[in-house]
Length: 252
Ligand code: PGA
Image (cartoon, rainbow, N blue to C red; front, side, top):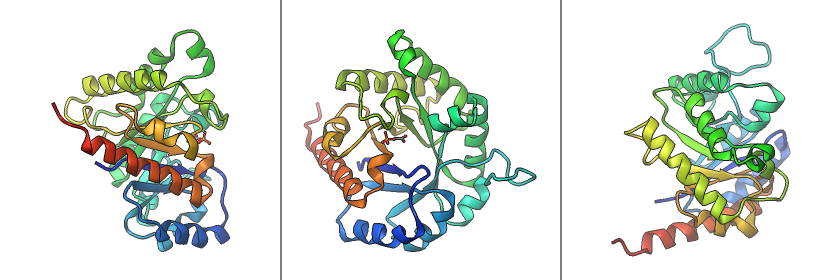
């Protein structure tokens, strides 16, 4: 099983950087499932440059297929220009744009209707973790951010770990991923047991191998570290090593 490594460029990147970035990725033997999520205007350039083996994702979409929504982009158009995935419910959209769980659920439904694979982000704030409410906060997000026909990926991203260089301990990641797995299995009996659960929040080449080796961690969503192709590739290399270890582990 290949792990998924998704790169969230956020509001970074430039047209001149697309070709060199893709050339660096293409030169490497990558056996992880890679998804590049650049800002909207760079999607067509990436769609033209990326090999078929590397997927393209957007960072948001509107809940409606078309209409009077200035500045927004529909899932249908994203699909048409070559995206296969879309990040939804990122904590920066929840905080910067006031997106609620219900908003996220409507966007996930729109993405699915357009044939896009959603990567739905959940994660607790620092005060929720300090208050011992992290697992309840994430379970609430899962319960209300996913429509009944959900199929896609989940990204667990503790807000306090995003862009801070801080990461949860291995035990904290393991506990939260187990909680998310149990919640998904209860909510979606058919798909929940196998829905990939990515970890995100200060993933970098130095910590990727340890994080990706944890149980129920199905890959990583990297922000800052995805901006340099070499760092993104180093994270992907850790994913390949983690997959190989999992594949060679004796089954009992
Ligand atoms: P980071 O961001 O890797 O820069 O912490 C992750 C994310 O927000 O997806």
